[in-house]
Image (cartoon, rainbow, N blue to C red):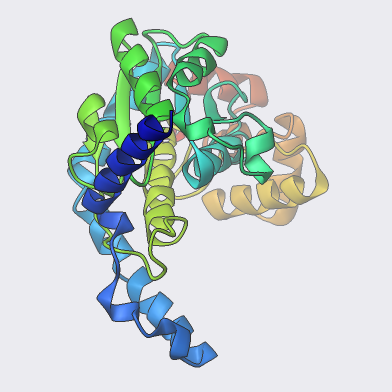
Length: 311
């Protein structure tokens, strides 16, 4: 048993030595000797590299967005899966889609190794449990209509790799996001997204640059997909449904910005539209009542700009 453990550890050490995000950063070797401001400058200088690394992956991100849009239009879902920081980032992006774009909770989902407990606490061995990765996507009834996005800074997480392999077998679209080229998550996924941000300020602390890169990619995936699905007008979040006082105030502001109307006009239109900003905007811009505005939007699959321009 001890020999097996030593062999397993040696194999893992060999893998880590090949992972870019696990390397030592020569620019921060003296970080423990620096003043507070100097430490922060070092971190900031490293963070400044992240957006450029993500920019190189835009062609691959675009492929993923186009696939997501196609599958969502066919009744599928966007599902993120990851462990640790990567899993938490997927959940964060998923839960923000409902209030931002008024979509069902089930349309964009996040799965994390170790379950809900792992959102706030480390769960021992969860990321190494290949069988559980498959069980967790089966639990949400993953099917060929869905898109599964695997998240792993190192790109080697067995939990994520097994879920991607299972999704491929089902015929679902798969994408992988990792920060180390040639990693299993990337070679298993149909679409590989690999922003290479380099070694972290603190060796192996992939919640830093690698986490930031993953978050930027997730922002792009969900936001661009929702734009392509007609959830915006110009750069306004017009699909917001005003269900509390804060959202009502935001909806009034959105209607005013989209139509150049007064606050009173925006408020009246929202009341008549059942507090749906998109319908209220359509009413004001076309002079139609709520029912007609909803009908015109439906005729154009919810795309407000198309509906307005066809009038």
